[in-house]
Image 1 (cartoon, rainbow, N blue to C red):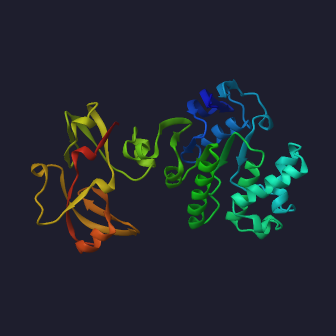
Image 2: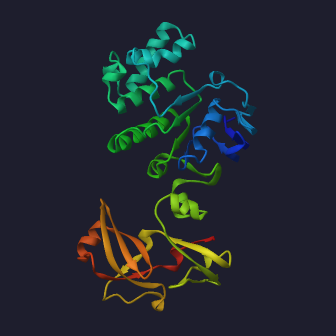
Length: 355
């Protein structure tokens, strides 16, 4: 039977302040799950309860069918990697990695063999005799990861492990962490506030807000089908329209937009969201789709190069619309700041939420 981790109606209060509220989550054996959200959303408190550093105020945490609420961290066989590497500066790399094995009373020969295996795995074999201060931040985080993996834990917990590193190193190291996790098949729970990080490495993402879960889904579904306005705003970028929905017609102070019937599950005051890459720029030669509906005129006021994409800010009426355009198409278009644009907002690109 697979060893699943389950959180059942788990809550945590600090001095009557609810940090986590009725969290329900099941993580399968070998799965990579990321808890994503801003500071104060409850993701780290949730991780600390799983690790055993905090005890739930209510609810149950089960692992392999057994309630582990009161089990001390040392008895859970979970490896932990912290944001601050927490390495012993007076110990060599090999001694840091071996530390947990010594605590578990591994034989010396087995300890040496395991340390060698892990240092080779994380690409630090040639640095085994160095001390942590002699290593870069990325290398130190690899040592911390090797130390957490040394006792062969059944679950690995990572609390914002890359947030202190430079952007380029973060991208490289997160790919290495995902590759390691895939190769080892170890259940992994990862905490981050970085949406790009979460979407790039996770099997599933848990988006949290004010102590509660907003959505649990595959990264692609989190981005393409956000279930709440909060998720649409926090994960990626969205343009929002607040208005009154009647049938599939959304009306506001200065706009009237049609949304696809499939997006209509309510009526009355709503917020409609559309991703920047879904908005189309029409040239003078192009006839407007859908008999001229969902068209907006505007002026290009900001151009930001993002590599593959170019992000345009178009001032239209009382609002600024964000439009993402492929860099190649932007170069071919000859657009410049100050140009007048016609935009088409496809009805099926909208997601509608209660206001």
